[in-house]
Length: 145
Length: 145
DNA sequence: GTCAGTGCAAACGGTTTGCATGTTT
DNA sequence: AAACATGCAAACCGTTTGCACTGAC
Image 1 (tube, rainbow over the protein chains, first blue to last red):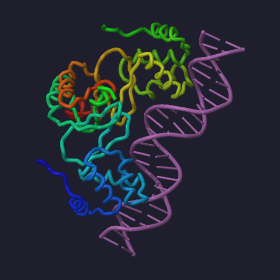
Image 2 (tube, helix red, strand yellow):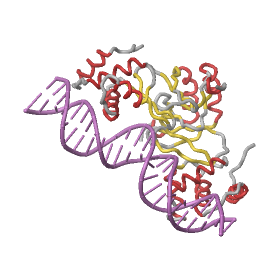
Image 3 (cartoon, rainbow over the protein chains, first blue to last red):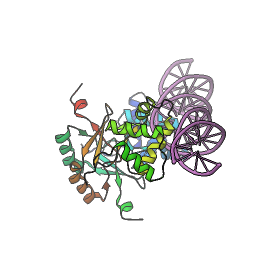
Image 4 (cartoon, chains in turn purple, red, green, blue):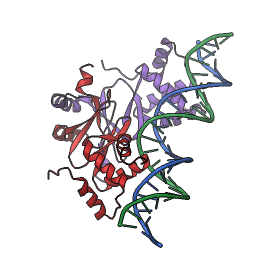
């Protein structure tokens, strides 16, 4: 069940199997996500991609990410009023974003379990700690510059 | 410490004391928030206000809400990718938004306390359950239409 | 050769801003 | 009369979309 990070070729193979075409931009987006490992905005991803495929447009990156989400290769997370961030899917985790420095951190789902159950018991609300990041202050910002 | 809901006149008095002018639009925004009691988008508030002061513009409502936030009379909350909602400040509570129907609910801070401590202990992150709503499914949406 | 994929520009929704005008004090 | 507050339109940011073109198959 511990689905390890796929390789570029595995992702490409999956997309081909779905009848999708493999373009330079698509390969570069996949590579950018695999290399980054963590959470990136579309703007950041586009920057990385443009280093290899110069006139890749933002809208193309949005479209590629949308496709990768459909095939459960990536996920995105909303972070307060900041831009959404994209990351490889598969690992199960929650998100918290620092409202001061804007960094998004992953938090293992275990930390959420008790709370999630308590919330559901008292309010009927089923928490999804993945799709929207919790807000607050990260250690660094909390304890001063 | 249990600061009850202020009256329209009390809010007006506070603003006057701060040297602010009281316009028809401002009174109407205050009234709309007091009457509503719960969370409203700027568009909703503007609609209510326009019923009384017909050509109040969205930007005016934004500016009034900004002023009311400075004086800690209202607060706003971000709800995933939806519009922010505004509500009277003072009551201490967290927010959860249903990702299906979009409704924002208040949750007493007690439910967050244990989790908040656990999160802080394990990750150093200090949760602010107020400014950004947690995401998930409300009871109604979870259990089917 | 076909069609999915692309670049570009325009449009979007929520929010903010500049500026000339109106209204509170 | 002097500030402040407002309406309007334009700009903003992140994101989506329409369209003609290009390049993967």
